[in-house]
Length: 273
Ligand code: NAI
Ligand code: 15L
Image (cartoon, rainbow, N blue to C red):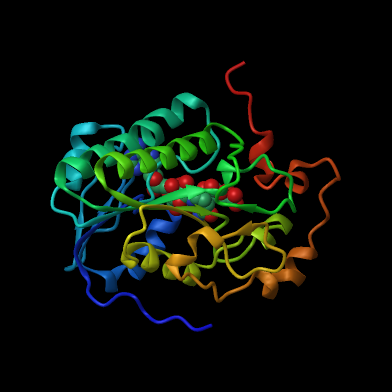
């Protein structure tokens, strides 16, 4: 099956949060065709703005600052926040208050489309090899996964109550290449991520759609049948990295990296004892 571009018209202004992060730096270049002006935001330092860019530092935990950040944008790609397992108190401001601030600002400024960087860690406590779809009950594997789960609920509520549409992408592992055996299943190439973002921005009538973000890997755990309307067809595969990944020692049979879909995140904590 071939796909055609669904990006007929560039948005006037797109907001990308998390622009200083690993994916944010990649997307800063790749989102260029989709907006006349790309507004970039992070709490960390960002490279200076090019002609087609605006750089606006912001703490997602600051409601008023997020309100100002969202003014004048046509859609939001929300990638900012804590991206690994941390104590609850560190997740609360950036991720939990942060997602509320993003949606409240979207409501007040009339923004109608959000793309939310959710995570596989909302279902991380399922055993590896258990097939899941986007209707499977969530099993978050920590405070980080819980914050993404809450983000998905926030997206659902803001669609039902205010008609703001969201595509929540449960990203697997989006890096230049898979780092380990688990990521052979969860890997999402940057090209496939970019295609998925294009679909998430341009597909009409998405309501709140949840989609797993993984490439066309062998033996995937996740089924995107309920997100078929996005027309996302992954083109890359982790197979090309199999030899180098399988040169690594096999984790022990009781290692969470081998047991759970969320891998090592399932064994993080407790914190603060
Ligand atoms: P990252 O940690 O490199 O980037 C996150 C960015 O958010 C950082 O630049 C950080 O400074 C910023 N940030 C943190 N707290 C903030 C605050 N209070 N206010 C404003 N900005 C703040 O993570 P990465 O890998 O680029 O991921 C981007 C997004 O995608 C994250 O939301 C992450 O949870 C999600 N994701 C990424 C996956 C991956 O494989 N890279 C997998 C699943 C989800
Ligand atoms: C995530 O949610 C993290 O943000 C990323 O750093 C990876 O750990 C990824 O999941 C993963 O599960 O591989």
